[in-house]
Image 1 (cartoon, rainbow over the protein chains, first blue to last red):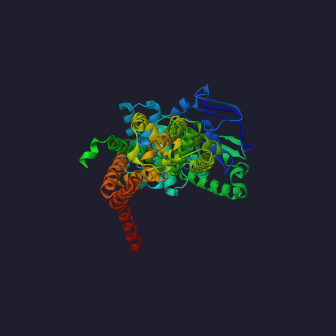
Image 2: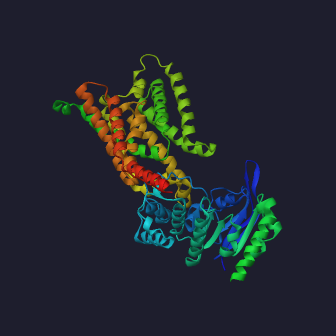
Image 3: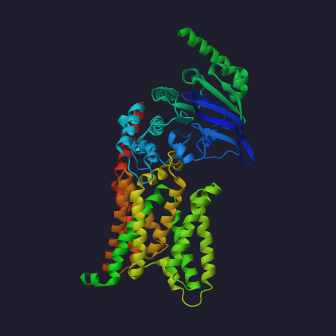
Length: 260
Length: 283
């Protein structure tokens, strides 16, 4: 197994406060890891730092086996879906226009998209299941459809690493599971390495092979998803409601196991 | 009207319609989609300050206007990024600072101040050949950059973070777009003047936006509407002997109104609303 991402003793400081503290973490090729934590615990900061949008105060970032220095080049190998995309969806663009953006960096500055780029775009549109939306203006889409388009844009980059920041936020329960199913399918079909920020802890066993919990800027748990389900761990995410949620989870898990 | 074609001032005016009207309407697409309508007002007052500095120091006011506009354009992007505030807020700060400084320096100019004040009012019929050459150069650079880097500009307009995530040097493009916009505004001020330039930046792209869902088409339509507004304004002002700048502005507003009425987007939206209402009644 090769290491896709390695973070060593990372500190990120904003407004004289540590938003990520002493964070060490490794992501191996093929991993599907969930990053869990309460709001404001530092999950998005961590993802933005991996993308090179924020610089750590100290610590080292290694991407694809090399120290991350030239982020603009490295980003071409990372598919990134941000949390709340501040896009004016009245923008005069079609779904294909937005998906094709994933190839712009790879095509090169001032160069037109080549046949290979167009094939990658069409494959991403097909794999994500949005062929019927291809020529539709982006302003005519629902929240779930927009999320799929973001996902298609990220995977058409043919990335080695997929970073997803709460891709299911703003979606109803049905659409959340549909979106996670799609991410899981793409992860396996395209042999991706995926780091996903998510709140739906119940979905963990279905999709992820590992979970990382962050609380108050620090990593408090990193291991197989089954070991996540302890009251101490859940207290980091759900605070006072931890024991109630744990009971609910264990009941659901055992019911699922009996069912299978 | 036929004898007018032989006059240099009229030929210059026609060229200014194409280069200025078309150019302003092209960068108006950036202004509209980046939601920075204050850019026009802010840059025209920067140009005013540049012209005043030029007069005070004894060099060409137009060159002064272009230099100060370029400098202001370069400041907007980095300042808004560093301050963590919107570009509009920074443009407002630049507007007030350049305005204050311009009037402070204006009081120190001995004699007539009409050259500087002309930039505020503008007159397409007084544009010189040299001004046309400068405008033509900036217009050509704008069009070439837009054609060559269309995909990069499109993704920056869509979302800067996505642009950066795709490996595009988004800061360079964002700052560059504002710089080019500033230069083109300063070189086009003589067409309608600083106070009315806002309309050529907003009305043609606004009209184009009503009629298309494609970014490329929006750029082309916007430039066409800008040129048509200028030609129509020139013709109407000649026929009825009224101020050209004001009529150009009214023509561009008229085109916007027409596009708004004919917009397929509005129609499709009203159909959707009607459908939704019908659904609600059934429920």
